[in-house]
Length: 158
Length: 354
Image 1 (spheres, one colour):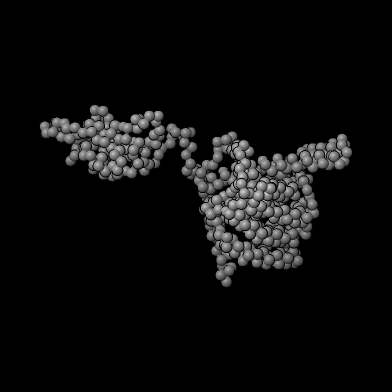
Image 2: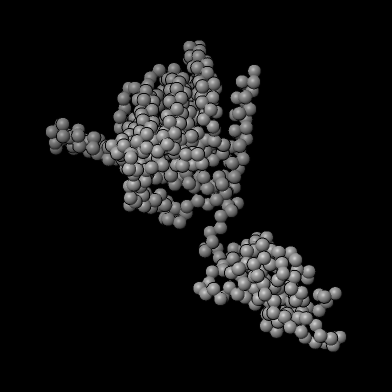
């Protein structure tokens, strides 16, 4: 008798499948995944997990969280990150202390593996969602991530 | 008689008044052929667009919407591109058969289009064996596919063509038998009379249970007959390249492609005519305006076309052995039993008539 139950189950499962796709068909106008990119350039927002480029966030007083430990530079498999560092005098203690001069990031060599962000002990760098990276000159892809005149946020090293 | 239909009558009278009878009938045939070619190409292009939009909506995409309003001219642009492309061929191909094959496919689907009644009197060729003619013609199309696969001298094309042959010949039986089930009610093979019979209720209502089973079998077999997914053995990209039309390019490829969509339209049109009353309006609400029959006919046909697209984008593909199992072990026995049930229903007068 499995002959008839096969037919019954076949029809039943096919109808179940058609119900699922039919639901998708009816909701497709609202739930379409497709982005009509150049048209919605103003409103298009990339999702948080998107790996566009490495950025270094600064607060309102132009302070970043990078201590210049160079762990990211060591972790990077491609030599994408280059930290040019210097020694400065700490105001509180009066001792000499390491600080970054320029955090150089070569976007053209970056594979977006994320090791630098994983390894950073102070969460100084993170993923940015910008994806429009085409430029006419390769040199424009070499960026200095820390803003000019910025300094270390107090309390990060504790 | 509405104006549009009397125009054809006027043209007919005018042709026969100005020319000798033989010339006039030839001119008339040519005109009708041109009109049908126009319908054929426009319908094919529209169906390709519809398929792409519907597929996109099933997959939560948007689909082509750039060329023209909502992408209406997209397929027109594609056809123009295909027209302008080079017709390549293989060196060792059998040139004559290779060039002949697309025309076999396209002519067979055009001939099938001729007997379908679009509305009362809008019917190019109303022969008294309409359904038989349709079944016979639709199985000629497979010769074109076999020729195309054989003559391109390509292993994969040949395997694809052979699969298509196996499939079409098997499912031909189910199509014929399920239509035969309905002929038991209509007692005629002429399509215009089949529509007339349905003025007392569409056949799917008149024949109730056996008619619904016959309709399901017809839709399954029809999908298989047109080589569409989930029965697209002939075009298995992962196994066979493109399938039987691997070696074709440009407009010859487009002929195969268009014929496939026209065949889908024809299968849906036969189903609409035989099961859902063709150009008859539901409950006869617009019976006084015969021209609206075209609208009802197209509405029913496109709904069934949509159903076939729904199948295509939902169901997983079958293997060749599963395909043949489905036909010979399931559809055929069910169909034979169904004919007996239908005969009993007609004999005992159990049909539902309004």
